[in-house]
Structures are given as structure tokens and as C-alpha cells.
Image 1 (cartoon, rainbow, N blue to C red):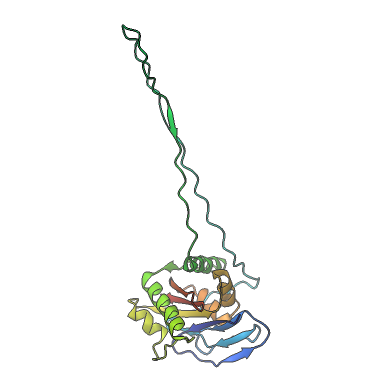
Image 2 (cartoon, rainbow, N blue to C red):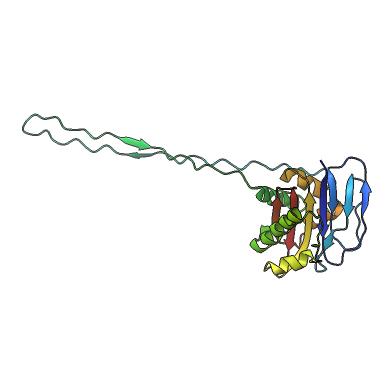
Length: 236
């Protein structure tokens, strides 16, 4: 399978080049006048970052762990019991009285649904940011809308770029979705899981720089399963 990743941004510089060492896929990121080293396989395109972005934290040199810890299971609620009432005095005539019985009920734990693909990406991003000493990014609904719309549009119209065929940039899409401070964008194509797409992004210096930019505070994620188009839209 061919996998691709792309980052987009304002005022990005850089060209397209291809590597042939069998990397997971194609990556592209947007950062002014920055180009990925040719150490991983795949075609890497320029990545974009808003001019207002600040210096990102330097990631650890050790290989980042990208596995997500499973969510803690919900402990069952303690059983509730009802007390048995005291027996009534015997009636004058012998008769059998129904004796109330004690009852106990145990509340069943609520089933936990598995995190969505977008939720898994958000969790993995914050895992990496924690290792780098950055505060976590918070999910933001307008950025979710912009990211999902771009993934769907690339899937439906069969292109892979930060700019639409009409020339609309990631910043244009984010502001049109109602978020006033666009920061950066990462996109990818072909990954079949959140863990795989995060490994692809973290193995590319430009994408990793966006993920570990401590000045970015919000994130929206979109996934189109038809063609496996992934989008991360960051905001300040």
C-alpha cells in the first residue's frame, strides 16, 4: 500500500523529493524554509505553518512510544441492599403471613465505547507533547469541522494537498469554519490506524514540529476512510 503524509501552511517554502527506502508512505508538512532530511522513505512535500507560530519544543532523541494506553475500566457500582422489616406480631387467628424477603441489586457497569479514530489521534498527540514538556492540546469543534471537511474533500475529489483545486489554503478553511487563529496543518494518506499515521508524522521533522509546537493549544482531526485521508488542523 502507498501511504502519504503532508503538512501545509502559510508562506511555506520547499520542493518535492522522493525517497525509495520503503518508508510507510508520503509525508508533507508546512514550515517556512524548512525541508525534511532524506532519511525516511516516501515523497516528502513542503509543510505549512502560520507565520504567528513560535519555536516548538525539541523532541527526545529516543524513539517515541506511540502506543496508546487502554482506557481504565469502570469499576462496578457497589451493590445496594434493602433491609428486611421486623416481623409483625402474630394475629389472633392462626394465618400465614408473607414474610418480606431481603433483596439486593448490583448495578451493571456502563459499557465503554472504543475511542474513535480522531479521538485516538488526539490522545497520541498529547502523549507526544507530554514527553516534550508541552501542555496538551484541546479538541476544538471548529477545527474538527475544518479538518474533517478537508479529508472528505480530498477523498471525494481524489487529490492530496493543503490547497484545494481552487487554491483555498488550510488557513482559509479554518477561518471559514469559524476559528479565527489558524496555526498549522498536517495531512496524510493511506494509513490504516491512528498509531500508524502518528508514526508517519513523528518520523518527519516538519510534521513532528507542528505536533510538538508548545504555542499551539487547539486541535481538530478529520479522517475519511475512503482512501484513508487524515487531517490535523492546529490553532492558537
